[in-house]
Length: 150
Image (cartoon, rainbow, N blue to C red; front, top):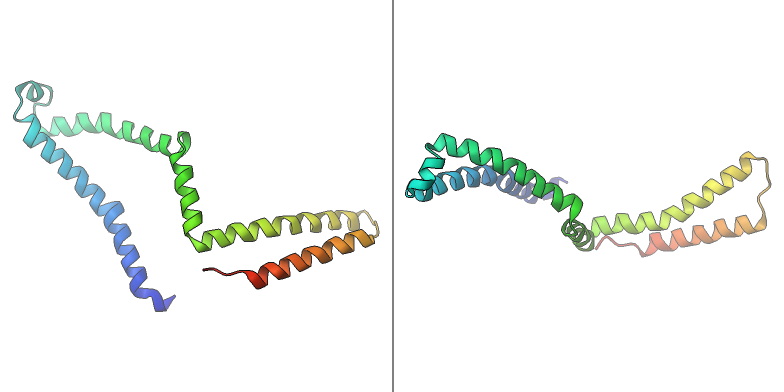
């Protein structure tokens, strides 16, 4: 991990900048620009928003719930988040490896559970059971030998 300290610092800097600083700065900038360039120049809007503070309060009361709903819809009600997650798994070799490992390990876990249940009932393992375990062992061995993170 220490060999990547520069890249890790760069990543944390970008996260802090884009998620926190740029977000707050953009919100302040948008509110300021829209009020002083648009609302102050139009009397009918000035009646609705008599001061900058009124503007911030009204826009916040409408905007925050709207944006929460939009964020919720993005994650829970539209296909866009699923597409993003699919792309992340396709593009990230570590996530892809976790998915592949899980796909290989689940049948092994199931077979081991069946064998444990059988042994707990004092049943003898049959030749068929041993053959299936050997096949799973070979599949796991092959998977381990072939796996690459890249």
